[in-house]
Length: 193
Image (cartoon, rainbow, N blue to C red; front, side, top):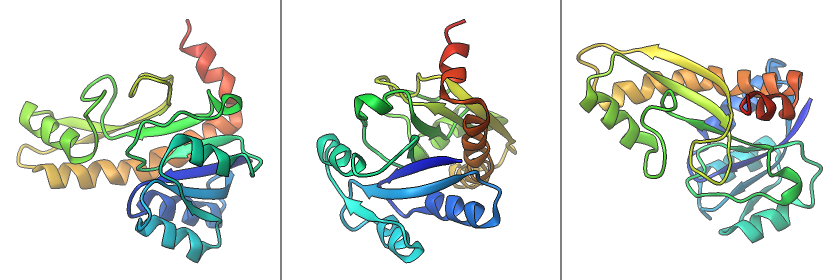
């Protein structure tokens, strides 16, 4: 069972999903601490309600000072809208989810509704999400899991976003369970081939 830190910037919808799945026993992890770079993020209030230690920290050094107090296996970016540099001991243990099928619509500047608008503008009929390890370049770390969703011709970017988020709710816990089963190094070695 993986011990996780969750970093977020907003409403905590992904935290809700993790908490529910941990309670149900379908996510093989435990949340040890939640940190937000936004002091009034709704996700912090939710973390407190769930009983998780919850902190506000605006920069990497402050975040990492908090994380040092906890025994952690992975750090999960759950709607964390800032480039994060982990402590050296956890450099290869940071997971992120991106709202497209990487390598499409990813990289610096592509996040949230910007991705869904680009998907709509291009006329894509498939989108989805990618869970990957984070490194120093946006969306370039080893891929853990991808899940696709079918789009209709008349889907607007809001509908696309809703479909992709529903896929994220399945894909992110599945990816964490895969990391728990296979280990972090498996995915980093796999991407070297």
